[in-house]
Figure 1 (cartoon, rainbow, N blue to C red):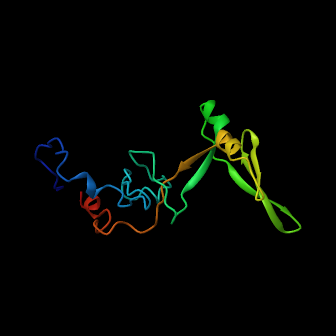
Figure 2 (tube, one colour):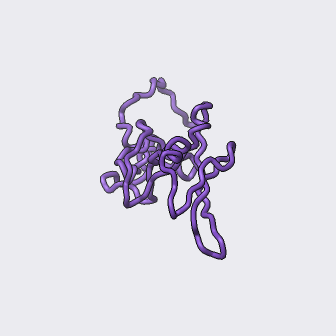
Length: 147
């Protein structure tokens, strides 16, 4: 005949294994913030996430992006893209484009209005992630597989 479990099922014991066994092992290279997602989230195309959204600037990673100030005032966060102005192959300035507002700032390398740039673009420092996990967490999701 069939052999089955004849005992009583008990409620699971939460907290038997610490959360860090299941947490993503990556840290932001710029500020050191720990990713709060679970192991394997990157393969599921889920981005890294941290508790504190603000990051610190690092010249090594140049982790700055600019956001359209007009959109921020409307409750949207649109990262602007920088496009070089070129004539006959020579770069002479930049245009900053917002997907909603169009060109929000234009500058030349000869001289630009820094005050105008500050009023139209807001700098945000973004987290920097790498494909190599921290050294202090070994293994992968072997604890989850065992459970």
